[in-house]
Amino acid sequence: MGTKIMDARVIVTCPGRNFVTLKITTTDGIYGIGDGTLNGRELAVVAYLQEHVIPCLIGRDADRIEDTWQYLYRGAYWRRGPVTMSAIAAVDVALWDIKAKRAGMPLYQLLGGRCREGVTVYAHANGHEVSELLESVAKQQELGYRAIRVQAAVPGVADAYGVPHGDKPYEPADGDLPREEVWDTAKYLRFMPKLMDAVRSKFGFDLALLHDGHHRMTPIEAAALGKSLEEFQPFWLEDLTPAENQEAFRLIRQHTTAPLAVGEVFNSIFDCKQLISEQLIDYIRATVVHAGGITHLRRIASFADLYGVKTGCHGATDLSPVCMGAALHFDVSVPNFGIQEHMPHSSSTDEVFPHAYTFAGGMMDSGEVAGHGVDIDEKLAAKFPYKRAYLPVCRLADGTLHSW
Ligand code: EZ4
Ligand code: CO
Image 1 (tube, protein in one colour):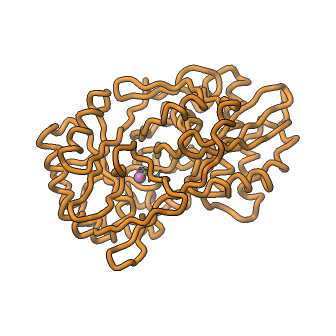
Image 2: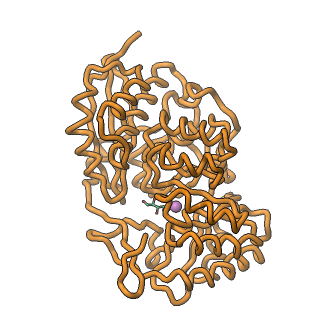
Image 3: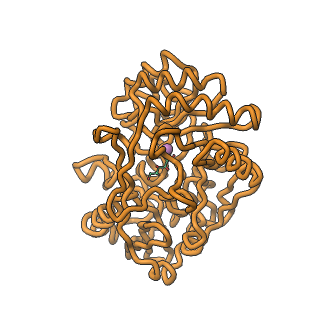
């Protein structure tokens, strides 16, 4: 027993979008990889890893995952935050990958084994008009998805969240400097019931329908949205209001029974402690890369389970295939699984990160390969150098900066 960390290296690649990957190699010649991508702030995590984490890793016992997590979290004195927690996640996932490879087992076996036969995922549908959105929903249904997130352009509003610019697939981090978008919540609140009505009228109520408010409402606006959409039975309404103020969700809850999902920007259990313990949400969206890896995400999920809150891991394209692979092992083994987001990566991203996970009939699966089942083709990765890319910023018509 006992294998030591011999080498740790950060690989940055941009096969269509930027990804940060940590590769850890042990003295017995096994390597593991972890995702450390933080959209629009990628190089901050690279520096954190290279300058401050990797020097402490060399020579450590690769089997001591929990101790290494505690060392990087408590030991740093400065705790939490997306940069720190993404860096810790990269180490944590690489070490779980190594441990599972050494055991000769898929990672989910080390997490207690399967709790389900597959992972129900939801797709994104979007449109510049309602008719285009309806076509997009039909297309996702044909691909096999039974849960679909709907986002459409709002009449009279220049930029709605979740709708692509032009014909390209939706990928918001597209500016060498942040693109500026203009937003109007009142118009959005008037439009949303019409949109949901159009979708339910065409597709009926068997389809699980999701929607992302992307932090743009005040608590009372969020309450009004929930109330107006309740009759369309959404599977969830996501990120209606920014969640720095957790008790704001009490107000939303007083007015609507629409299920609420929050937490893709959370990086610690403390970000959702009150939301969970007061049962102010129904799904916790934290995922592997931004919430401290498998080790910390399991802690969040166990805590959530005490209060009947289910998981709903973030799975946009800025979370690399390495994160998706690790998340799927978590998803098949966590008792209180809810749903997993799936936004397929570009073919060049899939080529740089060969993976064992699969999609069929609206479900994904981790696969049965030892480790988390995701690798990186370093030669190919080197052909796609880092390219600075920002997420947009959002303003109101009078120029006031608003949450994007
Ligand atoms: O805007 O991942 O639910 N999914 C989302 C994402 C986020 C991006 C930000 O990096 O809200 O599309
Ligand atoms: Co979201």
